[in-house]
Structures are given as C-alpha cells and as structure tokens.
Image (cartoon, rainbow, N blue to C red; front, top):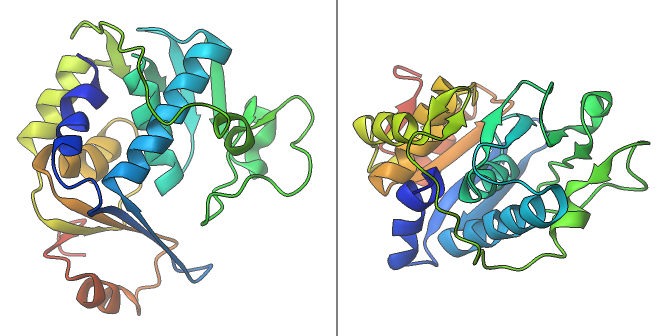
Length: 229
C-alpha cells in the first residue's frame, strides 16, 4: 500500500468538501484553500501524468525540488500514489520538478501560481509546464499499483517507515505551520502527520511574523509549528 493510499485515501471516505490545506503566501498577499476533493484531483492528475508520460512505477525516483506549497502537496501525493521514491537527488530521477528560478536543474517546471495557473509564456528550454501538462489527465487515479511496504518512498525511507513516522506524530488539529518541507523530516512532520491525524493544515510561505497571530485567529488554528512559533 502506497503512502497516499495509507494516509490520504482514508480522508476521501469522509467529508470531501471540507478544507484540508489552506495556503498563505505573505509576500504575495495570497490565500488559497483546497478541499479534500480538490487535493485528490491534483494528486490523481499528477499520478496519471507520471505513470503515462514518464513510466513511473513503484521505486522509480522522482525528484521534487519545491517549497512547502499546495501544489507541492498535490505532486507529493500523486508521486506516492504510483509508488515513486520522492527524493532531491536528480541523478537517476525519471522527472525533476522544480521552480522557474531553478529551471536549469529540472525538466518539469511548477508555476506555484496561487490559483493553479500554468506558466506565463513558454516554459524554459528543455522543460515542461507541469500545470499545463498534468491538467490534461484524469481526476481519478485508477492504476492502483501494488506498492510493497519495503519500497523506497521519501529520501531513502520506505513506505512503511514514512507511514509509521507520520502516524506516530499524527495531528488531528487545525495546524498553522511555517515549517519548510525538508526531506524527510519536514514533509513528515509538517504535512503527512496532519493527514495521518485527519486534521487540516494552514501552511504559511514567506511568513510575516506580524501576521502570524492574525492567521492563527482567523483560521482558528489550535496548534502552531514549529512548536513555540
């Protein structure tokens, strides 16, 4: 069973319309809210894209060089859904997803547009526009590969390792977080632990310290990461 099947799919059995990830970018002044269903659609599109375009299967390396962002969450869950080993090592990766500013390091560029729009203009030479490409694929992932628990899933950790760690840290609360999604600790603590606990996440990028208390109050967050933040 993949990381996505173990930690995210159970949420689809509940209220799919409930907010799951709310993303603030304080530098840009944006706020975007994704429901369980919307995140599932992005993850499914990503899984289908990776499977059909890059032949990703259990154990295939997929490099993700992206910050904590709602688009990153969809990419991670999609990659795990088809059994990929998510890593920052680009050496043997079937696909390397990165930002426009770091396009020379990858072959798929992620816009990080708050509204989910693709790149403005053509992607840099030798790269694909992740949003434009993945958007063409189905909203359901039906190729549910048999992913053994011993399959590498995140920076060398196996599926079983990742799931066990996330469940050990399970966060059932509404969590306000400014944690970077470092591999593997930040991703497990800042994203997967929230999914494991059935909570919801308010992720703040480029945080403005003067706005964090207002975010916490507005979003009714009951836990703040990092602790003491």
